Length: 551
Image 1 (tube, rainbow, N blue to C red):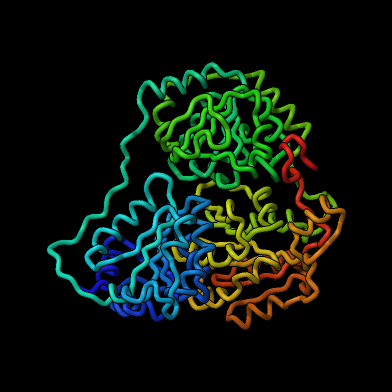
Image 2 (image 1 turned 60 degrees about the vertical axis):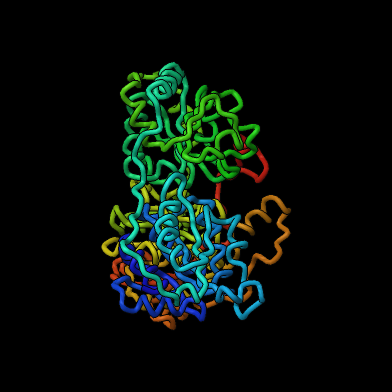
């Protein structure tokens, strides 16, 4: 078989049903082999879009998504999506074409050092040297991407390797992810003892618990021992937001009471969280009086930002399974009274009572009540992202997909496409902004071409809202390059790309029009006017401690 045929057959054996990508000179042999496969190919309109589509598949399923690009500009266009996946621990396998082996290093047409460029922004990468290597590299790439702390893996394959043939006796096996617990009885007992003896514990849940098993075990631990739970943005959906023990999201745009109460804790139990700056503010001022138990699958995260009193490198669900039988039921009456007191004195953010439909929280509330409970929500990056994180009641893991670590504008639409491809029976809603939507608006064609059940909601305040908010609050309203003079007709653009376009600005009954747009079984874009003076509050000033929130 040729190298290209081996690649395609191994993807089939892995169970890959869909790949996103764009062909070019350096990967045409791969596409030639793909023609005879049952794998569905989604033609993206930009390689960054293909990478985010792979992420949308991976974020909603927990399995590695796959994308294809050619060499040179194809590979460089993919870099942002790879870096985004690395920071958010998303498993994707990117297969990139490369110039012929003999031409590497000669500055050949569309040659770029993909291997060198992707070293710092991937979990691992490979430059294939012989056709035989494909039989070991491709299974290994998936194992690396999905095991331990997940992440992106790049396989760079010269076009002559795709073309060459080799003979082999049997197909390689794909390694199963080990489910053997890395937690000893003694370790579980030590962790349980610290929890049982704490007077005012708080659980800090991160992206490492945002899966079905971890979320269920997390709820059991919280209820058994009456431990309040706060979570990072990556953990939204892992704990019921309306639960009596929920403190909501922590950090820069989190709840005031989460940021206040975690500072009163005598024990912080960090599960799959990495203490990033958006969650902790100034890290040296974060939980200075608390003991910290830090559980993370990645040993490099332990003691990187916050010194742990007790740490363990393991999956959150492994630890939770082991410690739950050792946890003593505790009423914690005094701690619960304090939590209720602080929550009452620092009420959760909401829309003013006299506000109209076009207040962001009212729009979000209207959408919540008119989509199924299992709807998948994607966002771009900006004010709309924070409003959704604050106001949407995420109750199930893997239902919120957003660029957290890298904060990539242009993420929302292609990620929504990937989510819809992997979950064809579920509704997908993408919240975007008039700044973000233009970053990858070309993927509306891909959405139309595949008739995906996605509603794109554009919060249009005719500005780069979150950057403008920083200028307003921290740069004495010295607005520069954040207010748009040109005002694109997004509905006309949507229709030009082949999908429905609805403008609530002109609608006589905007609420009814929005509900009708959400009910459409196919792609629709809705333009929603948002007052440019609206800002996201509460907020922690960049470089300030969480206790100094603006509200």
